Image (cartoon, rainbow, N blue to C red; front, side, top):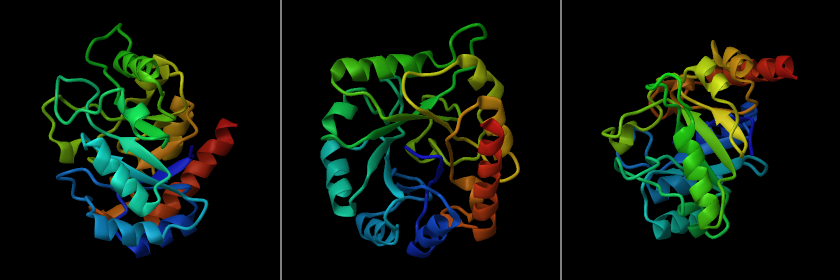
Length: 236
């Protein structure tokens, strides 16, 4: 779906800048408690500034389906990103049947790499969620592997914290049956290495290109996208 997604964009000016820098997806955050959370009115302003050809992705965690669809229609979103927990062990939760309930909108699913039990499949929970989504009627269009969090983590801290994924462990875990992206602690300084180690051609960042939460730094954004391009060229 994308190669470079810049998430947590909160102003129209930043949306224009990020798109001009070469990102092919922009994330608009509607997660309760996030420092990058948008309301509907501000979401409209940001979405209106995103040019054609750049994906508008709405990011949610545990939101009711009707609320997500209302925002998706109002903002002409191209995809929904589910960032809640995978199962009922923690709240907020985004269960597998959400893919089929979102009326044909592509779903990007954030999952976690579990390295707490050496020798086990670090993506086992993600595989189970995807299989259950398929059984319920629709698979996610893409998966983003983000930094691990505990089940007690509140919704506003589920992403955008700067915590890094173990890229080597992710490479060892192998592929999933849908396209994959890596997120979690990616910066202009390390993203090319993340692409090299994981072998993934899609990346997602929020805090790694910010001057402050929700305020993107143009120099960092441009440097990040340039580094991704170098990493992709080396990968090919």
